[in-house]
Amino acid sequence: MPKQQGIKIIAENRKAYHDFFIDEKYECGIVLSGTEVKSLRAGKINLRDSYVTIKGGEIWLIGVNISPYDHGNRFNLDPMRTRKLLMHKKEIIRLYSKIKLDGLTLVPLKCYFKDSRVKFEIGLARGKKNYDKRDAEADRQAKREIDRALKNNNRKRY
Image (cartoon, rainbow, N blue to C red; front, side, top):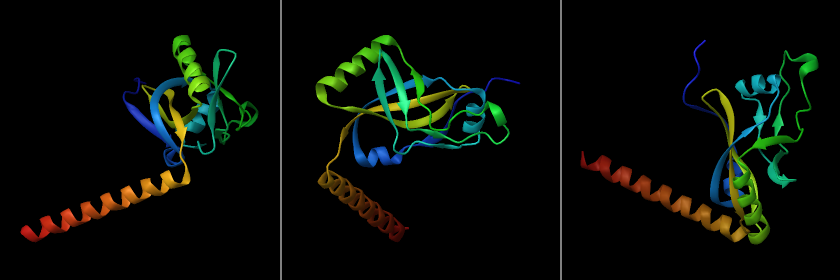
């Protein structure tokens, strides 16, 4: 069987973009069991209400629900277990210093297959206030109306 090429997105955390300002994005690997990978291929993952923490010089993913594989029987693990992420030591140290100094947080943004390996995109995030969320929604609505007006204007010309 040939090796798969390219990127196939499994899940995105849209709620993170609603609740946070994302300053920087990082790609990292993850330690999984075989049945978890099979479950991911079926798209059974939930990134909502999950976060990333750094303990003991290692980076951990907490709160991600990977549903048990249907045919996995005794090889299935706890769906909500804490999973280790894989990053270079220098990147982990740099992230740790930014989190401690600036009061930022790490959130998972996306889970995807990249050349048949499971990767996570995590974001260095600042929290949004309620008025920030309202401003973002107003900007999206204004852009939508402008696009709609331009589309109607272009239709009338032809």
